[in-house]
Length: 114
Image 1 (spheres, rainbow, N blue to C red):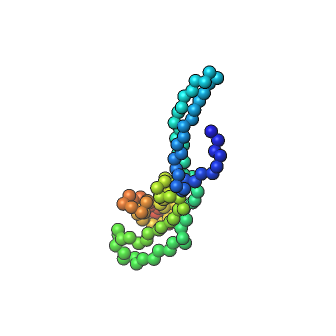
Image 2: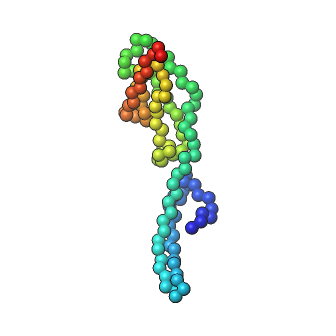
Image 3: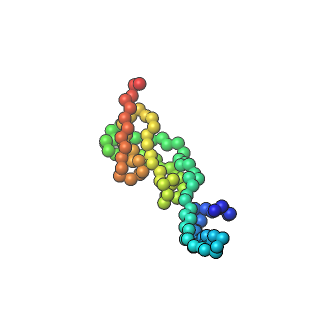
């Protein structure tokens, strides 16, 4: 089979059904159903709308929410490519970060003074 025309996962049709007939030289044949499913492509990278600067008082209670970084991704949230996971890559303090802006949490710690 050869792709004859462009398809788009974001379009209305994600499944294509067809019957294929196979015939030999003696005119014996069999028909088999074929289902072609369009899978999404990871078309977009996550984007933060701007750099994030967080200010809070030093007497802020441990466990307080001090920021909610929110990125966007043009891929559908219904696909693995559209689900965003957050992680801390560097830093100098102790923070908890919601990995998917849900209940699941990730702990990261680097001691200052290095």
